Image (cartoon, rainbow, N blue to C red; front, side, top):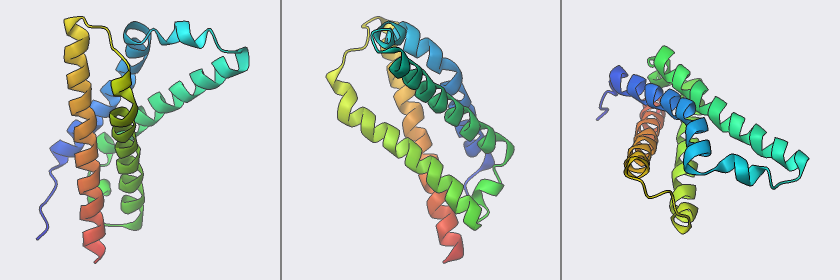
Length: 144
């Protein structure tokens, strides 16, 4: 039994990913004081860290655009749909797994807004895992 994945859910996931990309600099600066830590690195390592931060931001934004602009293409059962949803699902599964494995060792600021923000962002990340894994399974089942 194939349960249809509604476009609004895919688009909602896309909006969430774009939000994640846009809020990322604020989180690095205000929550993690990331730039202070990066300044302690050698100049080349500073640039590498900043570049990877931009990659993350760019991927989140790009995945969001794909979801908003091409929701039907993400669930059409083609090889490309499988590849793209597999990539995005793996990306978010890796993000959540890394967060579960490593982030509990660190403290975020204890202000209420950061605590609420943490729960909100974790809910978003979990939603991305569910939506894109569901899309991947849906696409694979379409070719079986």
